[in-house]
Every structure is written in C-alpha cells, then in structure tokens.
Length: 340
Ligand SMILES: NC(=O)c1ccc[n+]([C@@H]2O[C@H](COP(=O)([O-])OP(=O)(O)OC[C@H]3O[C@@H](n4cnc5c(N)ncnc54)[C@H](OP(=O)(O)O)[C@@H]3O)[C@@H](O)[C@H]2O)c1
Image (cartoon, rainbow, N blue to C red; front, side, top):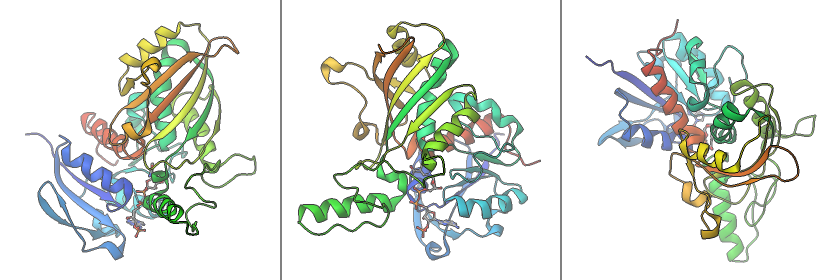
C-alpha cells in the first residue's frame, strides 16, 4: 500500500501559508491529514480544505507529535523556536524563513538545481529567499552548459514579499493618494505607492542590504561558490511577482539563440521572448502561475560572453509555497521523510 503522510502548515493564515494550503489542496501528494497551525490568537478559526472544515490550532511544541512533514511559514523567530521541537518529535521541517538557510548542516534547496543536497538532511531543510530561487532556476542550465562566471542582478520586488502587511500598505496608500489624503507608512520607511525603494531588509556594515547579501550567499551555497555575483534589491509598488534584471557572463562562448533554446527546454522555465509583439515576462501575468518566466534575452555588447535577461516569477508560489511543496515531493520520492 502507498505510504501516506501527516502534514502541518505553520503560519497557515499568512500570505505564504494561504498559498501553501491552496497548492496542497490541488496536489497529488499522499497527504493523510493536514494540521493548520498559527499564533494563539488565530487558534479556533475555521478554514475549509478539500471540502472539510479544519480548525486552526496554536503552534505549540506538542502539536507536532505524530506529524511527518511541517512546512513553516511563520517567520524566523517562530521557526527558530518551533523547528527543533518538531524535529525532536520525529517531524521533518521545511522552513520558509531565513533562520536556517546558511547553517552548513541544513540543506538549502531549489529542486531544479540541487535536490541531491537533501540526502544528508538532519530534520530541517531550508527554502531559499524568493529572489534567489527564481534567479537560480534560470542560471542553472546556463551554468551547466556555459559555466557562469559573473552575475549582476537588480530586482524589482513585490510588496507581498513583506507579508500581508506590505500589500495592505500599498493599497491604503494608493487609495489615500487618489483621495488627496496624507499617506501613512508603517511597513516601509517611506511611501511605497507611486515610489521605488532601494531598500529591502536591514542595511549591513558593508553597505549592502540583508536581501542583497542573501542573494549572494545563497547562490554560493546552492549553485557554485566560484560564481562572482553582486546584487541591488528594490521594492516596487507591485502586489505579487518579483522581476529581475540579470546580466550574466559565462566562461564559454555561446550564441544567443542557444541560450533561448536552453531556457525553453529547461524544467520550471517558460520562455516569453517576442519583443516585436510586446511579449516578455510581466509580474501581473505570472501571479498565480508556477514557472519562472524569462525573456528580453540579448547579448551584452560591452564585454565578452555576456547576456542580459529579464526574469519574473510569483514570489509567493515558486518563491515560497511551491518550492517547499516541491521539496516535500522530493523527500517523499527519495524516501527521506525521517529524522535520524
Ligand atoms: N512573502 C514572500 O514572498 C515570502 C517569500 C519567501 C519566504 N517568505 C517567508 O515566509 C514566512 C511567512 O511570510 P508571509 O509573507 O506569509 O508572512 P505573513 O503574511 O505575515 O504570515 C505569517 C503568519 O504566521 C503567523 N505567525 C507568527 N508567529 C507565529 C508562530 N509563532 N506560530 C505560528 N504562526 C505564527 C502570523 O500570525 P500574525 O499575523 O498574527 O502575526 C501569520 O498568520 C516568513 O518567514 C517570510 O520571510 C515569504
């Protein structure tokens, strides 16, 4: 008989948690039961899942007993507290927060890129940052064939990356502006409506933001530490869908058409590249979709063996919920749902 698994989604009522429930609802994973956990204040709330009413429970350590896979989407602080408790109770954790990403003992996984890293897991698997995930899905096939030497990435990130609070702030400010009222900022240090903020996460001593350093450090851990990469991350007034401008330099020479063909044939990628027909990836069109969309692929004439590319993906799906569900699928397929 086919093995079935007891799943939990922690932070089940949040932005990513909601997306997660939706993806699990439609997935064909062998889910025996689903436990929804969130903060005490949300315990008792009713949520419908697969036509059945589920009651949200408080995310206490004991709640993980008897569960096989917990998908954590409740922030780093909650994850640091709860994940070891879940593992102690025999439950494998896939964590969406930044809490465990750079710890050498915990695999950091994008299934299209480094699923083999799951083999040595010790109970906790980290899901990378949303901006890193979509970039690495696009870079992996190019790296395999032409060896990526250097990447310059600039991001245009949606407000849903800051949780539901970011989306609410953009909507409120937009409404206030149309009524000529004063805009209030609480999630962001400045107005986000009709504005662009070169500031995601806190600034570090080296002048980079936390988000920029995540893209740099996570690329080294997941793909290749020899790739030289620099990053500028920017928040834009878009609800969902992160866009990225990638400048990629390779060791080996290529034809631009070879890169386009490679993108079209690679798993998880959709090529949308007919600029003469106004066809290129757009955040509003990728929202709700699974793939990483690439387009505007063109040679960088300023140096040897380099291209520019536009890369867009739904930050709540491939950037978070979908990637974790794909990790769960790999764990199940590889019979790795166990804590040693
Ligand atoms: N949004 C993205 O694009 C994205 C992408 C990748 C990764 N992530 C990561 O995913 C996590 C969740 O992000 P989000 O956008 O879904 O945030 P969110 O909308 O604020 O949702 C977080 C949910 O977790 C709940 N929560 C907080 N502390 C908890 C605890 N100790 N136990 C159980 N539930 C708790 C929150 O309750 P309250 O609302 O009452 O606090 C809320 O329901 C974060 O770590 C984030 O960095 C987000």
